[in-house]
Length: 161
Ligand code: GDP
Image (tube, rainbow, N blue to C red; front, side):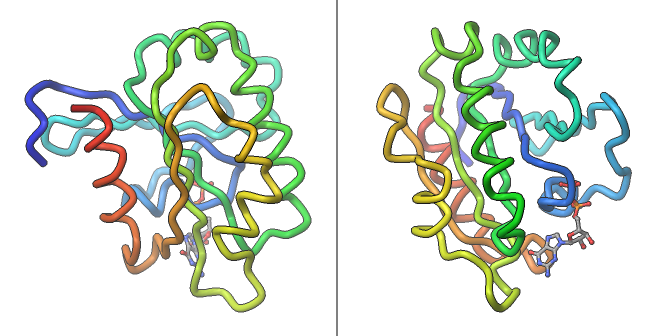
């Protein structure tokens, strides 16, 4: 972590994808409650995308402040990967975000669960190859043990320099 300046990372994803676990937080996100905490020079803001259509307008505030986005995917939730794809598309269409080419780190979480999608399968299901206007990366992780998290975070923090 050799960041010279402070940075804001926005952590999003469907409910139950593992956002809070990835950040060792115990407070569940309810409604539009937003969790915030700091690690060194990086501040993280976490919010749930599920069922928050009515709050979508408020997102532009977060997008205008963010230096990078972490999009957490429950790789074992095959039924809702299409919902994650829709939420991602809506997010990327946001006017504020569309103008800011900040990097997106995708975390294919719950890699410990059998029958989960691999990072390649996740990126196919989410259509990540269509993202051409910003840097993105996907890594598998297990938020419960922290496996794979460091590597992902290292990538995005590198992109912020
Ligand atoms: P959030 O709604 O996105 O904040 O999701 P949570 O962090 O609350 O996690 C939802 C559930 O998934 C909890 O029961 C976690 O213990 C579990 N979970 C999170 N990450 C992992 C993981 O990597 N592997 C497994 N097996 N379970 C996980």
